[in-house]
Image 1 (tube, rainbow over the protein chains, first blue to last red):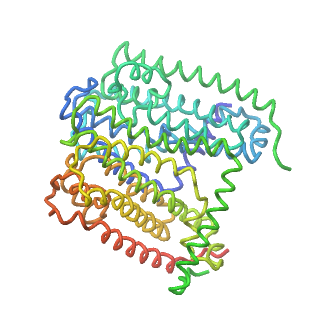
Image 2 (image 1 turned 30 degrees about the vertical axis):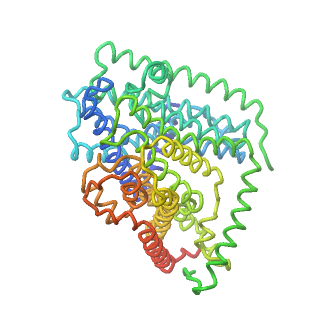
Image 3 (image 1 turned 90 degrees about the horizontal axis):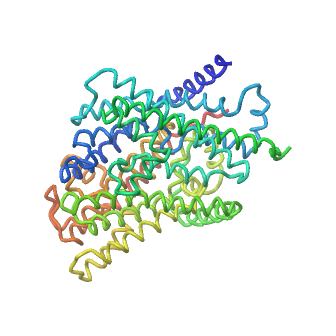
Length: 267
Length: 278
């Protein structure tokens, strides 16, 4: 069974790896956005050094980490959910339900494969360009990198769990585009992509940091920037894993309800 | 099948009429899923609103960004967002051109007696993009109400002109980007760097960016003429790269030149197109 899902994930990786020109185009765009936001953050942090507990180079690093994880964590959509929604709308989902594999695990494996490719193909180059053009606060000890990677994987799982729930809404709404858009908007804002969550003031900041989306960018970035070490690192993992379990569990419940009422449209 | 450029003259009026018909069809089809439309339109508004919320949050920590106050930054934000929103509403669909080349459906458009650009632009017309225009206008309204400017007739007239010329400039970028996709079908995302990226860039004051970057978007991809350059005149500021004040009069001419260049690029792309012809 594990082998099956591993192969599904490998297929997901290869599928996205096929489009090399598209990947290069995306890397270009990520890099352009990285530069724009880096200058905006520099303007902000030069006036308020230590804002949100970050120094200037940590803030600029946060920008480039955002561009690195943008596609991997599907912060602006673009994960497997679009396809899942389309399959629900057209009725192809019936074929998926016939497969001798679990629906949620199947799509999770697809999404992990996709994320692995996007992290390597789309994320690495912008981070390198950022490191060449700016003075980034990259880790001084090697073990921070695997710690960061584990946090990213947990973030991808949390992100998938949310997007899977969103996709299942198409069973009731038929056209899931609206919900999907609302969801990636929330993700964009509450992940820290627009502004690090530790800069959010007061209650808004506390709420934002407690929501699942902070697992997608803020938590992994804090791990890489060395803001979470020792027990705090364990706490960060527990936070991400907790949301992953809760949201995947909710996904299973909704999946059960959805498949009970599934009536395939059309002939 | 070969790309074919219609004889000059037919066509502009034909194109606009066909564009209107196709757009009307897509609007009716959108209204079949009303709840989804309402949510996506609101989502479009909220998407751009979050951008602005991020700027507001920045200003909760500082009085000025790069020497520009919040109303001044809001003025930049409102003008570029409205201009970009208009271009995106009218022409945003052209970024699907690469997909049409890839799956062969562009051939269908070539055999119809309607300019291809009008068909591609109207394809899957998304009324929900009005959300972005509305949000841009709201921020612009806030900026105009709060910004400290000695309003003269010239400055008042400059504001709607900025939005229109800015929209035309962004439209030129959309068309040029689509033309590029004739040669690189998978590279749709490159144009996002100039459309969405340009819009994001112009929301911030030019003073915070490296001078070479500002020169690049002034002289190479002339997006600075959407708002940075005319805002010098409206807000009474100096150009960070030392442009003379009369440059603020240039946006209409730059927009016209950009549209002409984009039109040529589109024709070149369409001529170079060869179907896979299966």
